Image (cartoon, rainbow, N blue to C red; front, side, top):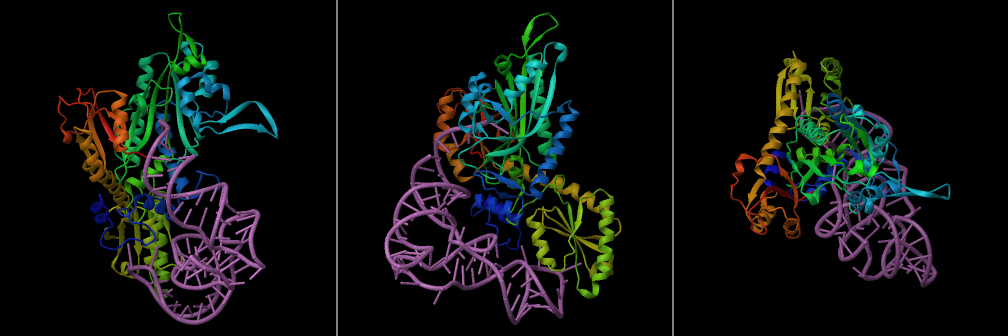
Length: 494
RNA sequence: CGGGGUGUGGCGCAGCUUGGUAGCGCGUCUGCUUUGGGAGCAGAAGGCCCGCGGUUCAAAUCCGCGCACCCCGACCA
């Protein structure tokens, strides 16, 4: 991984304010998100400000997901942030799961409330309560609702975007007449997430089912897509839960079915958060800074006019013309014609900010009828014809998007391994970093043992296994040696 | 929440051991010259030294208590 990172950074040394990935990946991440102006720390522990470039990334994630939610029949609604204390007692696992991280509102205007209100960590309870009032008949089903919201989870250890005390996300909540239909919804939404993350964010994922100890508090089954960061650690990019009738029972969500029987609904929930921004940074970024996939980059092309006072007039006129052509072609292009910064400074600045493509216009280009394009993903410079530049740029942005996915996919493959024993798994994690697929008997003790020994957790039980790993059909549990029931991805995780 | 580290102009740091005038680089402002990979010269501005309390004639420096961030654990969709 280290050599790869250095190779990517190219022959020229990177920006000095950014710690190299190979030196300290965690510091690299913190340097990049601040230098690229995505966020700032807020005065409250674990809380961050999303600055405009960071927030716009989130807005583009919202747009990409929201479109897909609508296409699959969902509608948005909004439920309150404050949740009555009593609601948390209605689903046992759910209380136990979230109690340690709940902030409470206990007073209003100096007077104590008769019932404390929690700042929601997720909305299953309050939505369950509302659904119990809305759902009476099979004709009311399915209910397909999504909400875009902020949620609170007071984690002990926070990291910008990946784990913050308050974060932004979307949570879908659906209710169905049958288990079969609810389970189909769970998989459909996992597909939606996969499609978005792979196509729009150019991040390959491993899809699978969570082990019982890793599933959502209150779910029957949880499914996830897991992305691999450049340090080999995993981030759960999105989850989708089959909640069975657990919340329906707790909140009494019943309906009269066609057969005139009163039944509990089957519910699902699914979510993706601003954690996705952390994934974008850590999957694509390099020692020069951010590298943004064109589909979600706030600025896709930065146009930089070059030349001294004598050329300025002509260069600027041509630059404005090109800018207009790009914008007319639907490209998110901006021009930086500030005179106080020189071209070289701007090159570094926009590379740090991850702008996918830079377009340079200078006196030499005017003379020869060319412009210079520089790709952020490969750091290549290309001289292309001035005529038809909008079409060239559009094609190149598409190629960059594809190339970024290909690179991330190759990295994921190179850092995916199989292990037969705990010792082997530990060695791979130490020496190569990445995900390790191993046999597992299904016992929680064996899973816990892996975590104790290696700090790696079970990410998921994949639906499909990469063919380069050649799993033996007679594989055994990596801990106890009994016949394996599952193959599980193990990795250290954020 | 436990162990370790850090906190000094916007950013990165030195100064702290051995108390006494707060310093450097970058950035910022002004002017001129510059412009194809972080420009040069000249001048200037900018600091309750994380907070509160203590010791002292005197505290960035010593002591106590907080707070924040980073690293490693525990916990955690």
